[in-house]
Length: 356
Image 1 (cartoon, one colour):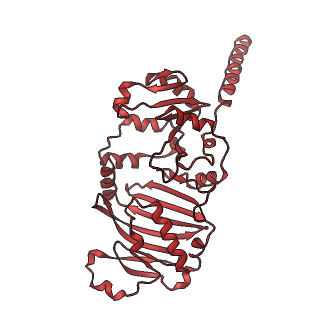
Image 2 (spheres, rainbow, N blue to C red; image 1 turned 45 degrees about the vertical axis):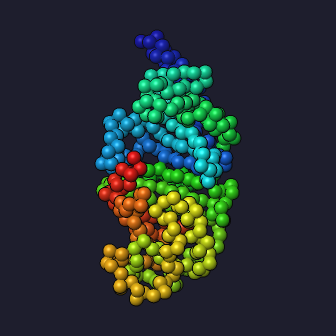
Image 3 (spheres, rainbow, N blue to C red; image 1 turned 60 degrees about the vertical axis):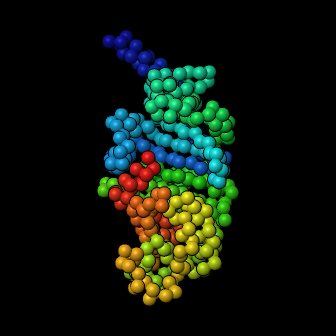
């Protein structure tokens, strides 16, 4: 009995030491989010999130997400897409990073079922290239417990060569927004603030009703954000009738607000917000009487509370075709501008179909 107990303890000790050595090399993928990264999509704690609402919405838009993908999400701890390309560059390169947590050794053993080993990289097998990547080559490299995927070997190599450290500015954003099941898109403005803005984060969440909520957080210590202070004193609180496809903004300083509109259009120039800067009422419509002569479908009522600085109800267009409408609301809080919109299920499905 004592002999068998010693053998058992010995085996557990050896396994424990080997596991300790093996997992000690596992690197937290957050170290890849350095100042060199300009744009990053991040979704963490995936294996603890409920994606049934997202999958139901995708399937209504004919994406046909099968049970294998749903099961696979249960095994992924984090997913990242990072790019060091310029915001305004037409040729953007990116690398995906998949974090399987502490089951990565099991996943690594199955990689050659889907990839061929070529020198220091794995290359997606031809049968899967035809099925998933329009026959384009996809490269994989397993580095310190993380799976890096890209269309070019050099893109992956550049990420691996980058200085690795925990970017404190991005860490704060990650911890603040981590519960959204659509993850977050982060523009890294901290190193080179654009117009005084040091944060731009777009997050999303799909509710049980399969409505989509998108929120943009814009932060910075500048006069534009300061111009939204004390707006409760401007006397615009309460329900108001406003015109569709126009934004109503209020601020203590109009000049800074116009600068803000320029910044907003810079990022949304290819979206349904394009050209809205020319259709904005600042603080108070000059002539409310004109609204009563407009068709009812061009008007709607919204509640402008004390914290709200932007209100609007705009059509969502894809290739000049209206596929739905959404309400925009902006709040100034905690030193950030928070602009959110809720897209109903029907409009979200139409949008997904258009993207597909």
